[in-house]
Amino acid sequence: MQNQKKEKVRVVNLMVGGPEELIPWDLVVAHRQEPWVAVDKGAVRLVKMGMVPDYALGDFDSSTKEEEKAVVKAVGRVRTFPPEPKDYTDTQLGIKAVLDHFDFEQVNLWGATGGRIDHFLNNLFLPLIAPFDQVLTRLCIIDRGNVVRYYQPGNYAIKKLPSMKYLAFVNLTAVKDMTLIDEKYTRLVQHWDSQVPVSWASNEFVGDVNHFSLGSGIVAVIQSRDVSADHSGQPE
Amino acid sequence: MQNQKKEKVRVVNLMVGGPEELIPWDLVVAHRQEPWVAVDKGAVRLVKMGMVPDYALGDFDSSTKEEEKAVVKAVGRVRTFPPEPKDYTDTQLGIKAVLDHFDFEQVNLWGATGGRIDHFLNNLFLPLIAPFDQVLTRLCIIDRGNVVRYYQPGNYAIKKLPSMKYLAFVNLTAVKDMTLIDEKYTRLVQHWDSQVPVSWASNEFVGDVNHFSLGSGIVAVIQSRDVSADHSGQPE
Image (cartoon, rainbow over all chains, first blue to last red; front, side, top):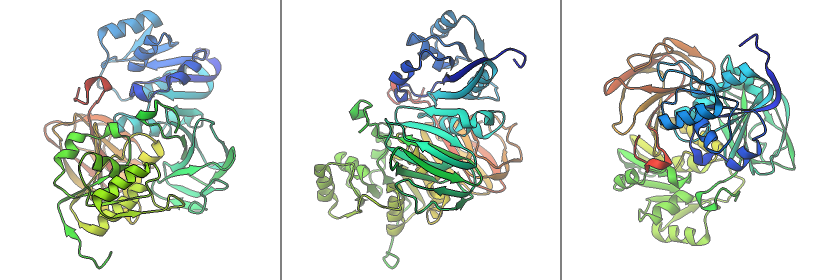
């Protein structure tokens, strides 16, 4: 794929096969004019929603033959992989396809949370290793209650997403000199070093933009809200 | 609490306030004869199930006054905390209560997965820092589709849980010399070193007991199954 001309876009979307009930379908539909790559059950559910992905791939081992046929019919050409042994996960294969076909500023990953914890952690840790580290600063994991972005060492301004309430800083690797500057709670994270990951959860914005700095390591910044089954996905 | 005599038990259970639909209630009920500690919304839901926890605590900021009263009436005495600022999460307060009151071999943590990712990661990473590291090898996080345990350097035999299908090894910290010995897939994790966390997902047991070894760092071992909304929690 190296020699093929890539399509230049601002945002590309990747749908994978995590639990359907955690996917914010209103937001997915709002992104329908952008390009989509979909893997396996992610392709099946997009096609069912009447959204035909630009590229579909997968082994379809968790789909019926009928579902697989519907995807092939809608998309035209589907790259299939044998179910096992494979060295890459569905999400990794999807990111590879995104990198093959697009020159992009941001990749939104949908259907990547909930369900099996090993799957979720594989998705969360995906941009920490090559060749997926090239999407680290461009990857955005989205579900009904959470938006996750990744940060390398530097000084950052984080903008509040209107629909979210909480703000969290999670070092995914060892870090040095991590400092929260102007959030609601800053006292415990001042020039902070750690060898182990810690989720500094339940912080909140003061105003619409807050700042943090990082000397070394990788930090995930998570904006979230409470989504209860009782509240039909509305923020509480 | 240091001078008070602790109750000696094999297993103690801790219920916290994560999404209700991920809690395997049949299993919770099967543990009803064991001691329970419950925090906040976790106490509310246990009392609603007719299971009165031995100790209840929390700020009850996400519960109604009526729910809080029901807990106080059932449990008798409830330790309350002001909603904020607080330096400990609900789960951390619960583990502190468990350590205060019990001398135990295993602590099962329920209601700790799903929902807000910052909450879940805080629970997952909890035993990596003092004083909670004293429960590292005794902590077991349980939901409908996942069971998580933690391992320090050493040589281990992992026993298959009959209800689970998949096996995953996730280094939560930098690790050295991690080796999978006799699982279905072992090729990629042989004397493996890593500075960043990786979820080696979707492995499977060969037989009922498999082995792994670790030179340094902390590894979570996750047994899981697919639980879809369509299948009423039955393993697929």
